[in-house]
Image (cartoon, rainbow, N blue to C red; front, side, top):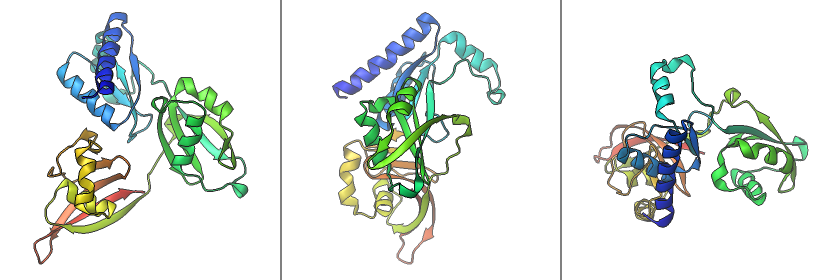
Length: 263
């Protein structure tokens, strides 16, 4: 564990202690997959910490952790989960980013949006996911950043844009995916990644050994790991895909697999 990861563990413990001492819910910044993995490892070591996570919508990759004091966590347990009751509100705002004039707008990417935001001096940890929806982008950010973004983000590359705070409850996101099939010698992490990313297994090994591959948000460092049907696999710098299923074998005894790659 490097120095930054050690500091994150200390920050998690401090937020949990403050929550209990002051009887108030405390929140982390947005955590990436590696940081979420560290969070869950820490929670296993300190079972007294009550923690919830959210990225503003179902399926969000980057998430904020909420540390809930005992008094509030008991209330959460006493109320049915489908009642809609929550003892706190998430400090997450949803901002719709769209061209001022679609006719003269240039194609923009996730990278373009992120670059423009960081050019404003906003740290990545204060921003969650950026969802691409046709000619609009939806940014989830810490609520303290919403006003600044809406007033200062007026241009991305050569395209003039407007930013509008919207209700996250109205946000419905269906990511674009494409179905891919292939054959592998066995159901192993490196073999499935080779099918998804159209690359050789050997060229992907460093991603796994360098701690850049996550299965359902859990860090995996062995290429022989065997994913199960439905597992979501993310590789930093490459993308993510879902292992749908294995559907029989070829005449040569190789496993036929189906995956759903996010594009």
